[in-house]
Amino acid sequence: MNGKIAKWLRILGHDTFYVSSAVEDSSILDSLRDRVLVTRDRDLAVRAMKYGKSCIFVPEDLEDALSIISLKFGVRLKIDLSTTRCPFCNERLVRASREEVRSKIPRETLLSHRKFLVCPLCGKIFWFGTHYWEMLKTLSRVKKKKYERMEYWPMMRGDGNDL
Image (cartoon, rainbow, N blue to C red):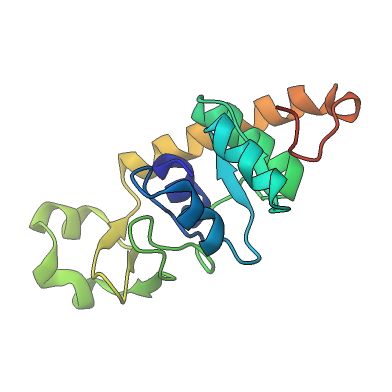
């Protein structure tokens, strides 16, 4: 799975296992268990299907890939603060007060924001600044692509094997 897709799926609340492309294909396939392989590697996708693994081949474009994943698996294209996960380590994020993050973030950020999320595993702190608003714009574009795809989706096989 591409790292950007993994981060987005985590932000959208999905427990996501990411494996670097440096890892051998056989190790990736062995580690899948009951997970779905999301890949941009056509050869890996073909091998996964040969071994009976659940797999979806996605395009290079992040927004196209997310729209296809949403259609295929029903992934909601909405950030839900009660389920969102750390994009870096996959742990579920928890809400934190200003007091809890006061000594860990820049003063300007503390003064200009009221809501914070913290990763209890890696300690990263998140707030609702310009990056968050850009993510919402991206999700809006992904939704548009998803609805455009829905017009012809029934004509596709829809089983992720459209290689």
